[in-house]
Length: 394
Ligand SMILES: Cc1ncc(COP(=O)(O)O)c(C=O)c1O
Image (cartoon, rainbow, N blue to C red; front, side, top):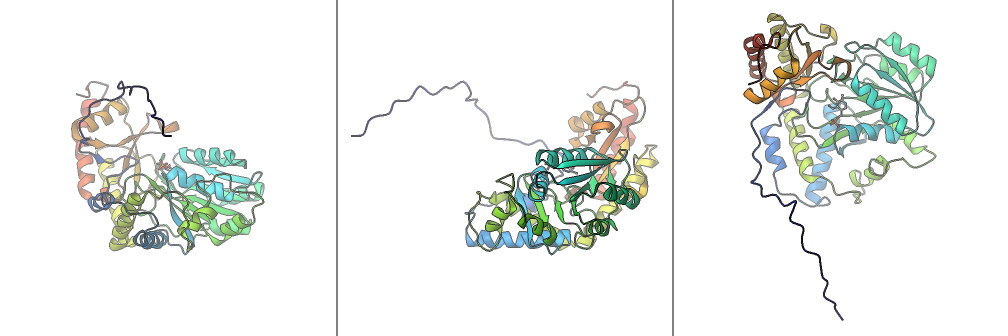
């Protein structure tokens, strides 16, 4: 016999009456996210379909193939992790590190420390080499560390968002082969905007994000793994120490079996497919050239108004520029002023560069000469008012 359930009265204290969201207009010229392309926003708002719908399954393959193009790789295991760049970062380590493996992390900024922290959590024996924030490693320095530590994995950041440095990669993969270790590369701030040749460079594991050079909102973390890294995964003694990010399980969904793993964020993948389609439509070389040209316009404009760039020209990232905050200026008050009064976001410094630099991003959809001129004009006209704290952020 059915019994009638009784429930306590609904607690109304947290039920706040709200109108629907109205997002203030923003131009995102910071370290990310960048503005999403309008076509990507349209794709995101399409009606969801089931994550095993044949239409969606075809779209998954398109996303994988276009990611291979964007990264210049033939890696079979190439897919967008559900989660932000940090999830994909964690996936590269989770799938390659076995407890006790030696992982050498070449640190030259904030995100190198994150790699070391994550590797430690997977019980790697972490060893590090470090450079000042604003510099890159030479092949000689990398080789000295590889020969000293003989690691199973060398992990490093290609585009260090905290400093604006682009690590030269030519020759690093050959060194890793010589010392029989895998090469793991963070390409979060380079994918789509800076030349990347994963296979030619001998990169074994890489990850990125959706919200920078791909002009998509945050939420997906592209991931890729070479046959060498796959061979290490297949030889593991134990399970990958992370169920959600275990690529051998994920590949049963992303590979030919199409077995349920987790409910894919289908709309995010609509957005990713559209973002990658736009990138392929423009062509990688054209996109890289656009980023380079706009960055150079920004650099000469900044120097033209008397500002100093933090990184020497040869190592500068086209997607992210660090510019020194002049003496006597409250950097935070100025960024707040730009946001409140002009709807423009630029970033402050991270870690050892906190309070010393601003970070100006020109990524994906936002890498335009109009945006460069806009920020240069504002810096030129409005920065003098902020000297010696004489201005307010009104
Ligand atoms: C170089 C680098 N690596 C990793 C990350 C982490 O990505 P997310 O914030 O999308 O998790 C970021 C974020 O900006 C980054 O710039």
